[in-house]
Amino acid sequence: MRSQRELHPRPRVRSVAWPARREPARTYECLKEFYPQHYAMALLGFVTGLRPSSLRPLRRRGPEADISWEEGRLKVRRSEVRRRVLNRTKQGTRYSVHLCDEVLAVLKWHIETQLNEAQEGSDLLFPSIEGGFRDVKVPNKPFAHVATEIGLGYPITQRGMRRTFNDLARSAQVHQLVSKSISGHSTDEMVELYSSIDASEQRVATQRLYKFAVIEGGKGQVDSGVDSEKGPSGQMERKSA
Image (cartoon, rainbow, N blue to C red; front, side, top):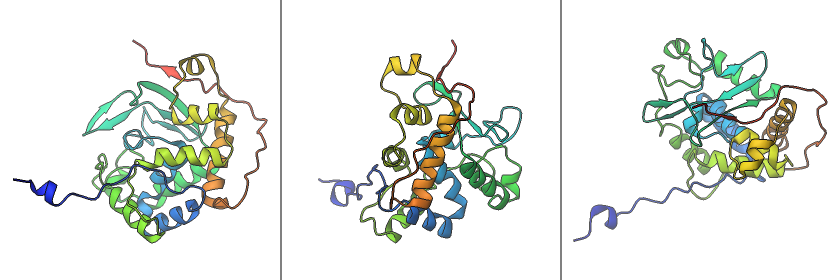
């Protein structure tokens, strides 16, 4: 006898990218209009390629804050799965991403306007309405609604943020080495061990990703100028034994 799941299968949700070249600006506009409480987290995911498990445990303040507002540096060093926090990312690395002023402004807007009393008492950057970790499924309904609003034609989940980052990085002409240093996703061991990314490269890259996604909307080329500012190394850090 066939099971209920076989008789009534659930529609398959695709972990694919949003149509980055055609719909980025509309995506963020819809998110901000209908779900402003999720806008900053989604934007940060799109312009850094961070997994949801790395976004949920980010701390905005406290002795072990994961973001330095003065430097504009995001420390990616934890992951959260089923309320269990690991002091490493999924790929076992700890690294930093230097964010541009525009992305930092969105994060500050989120803190100043989107947190209730319980959330304000939490050190987390993106706390749940009770102040703890957000449930892993919370963003899925908003993402599905936005996909319908923009006429995407198929359901999509938050996991698509990482894939979209790769598409945005190519569209914004971000060098592959720099994009790997931001997302922390490297398949070349030698690149990870012996390459060093300047902080200004990451900062300019996140700015170009932001401009392409939110302002340009895929309608034209983004200025590929380089920033002459010098900063600390963005080299990947291995977890110490």
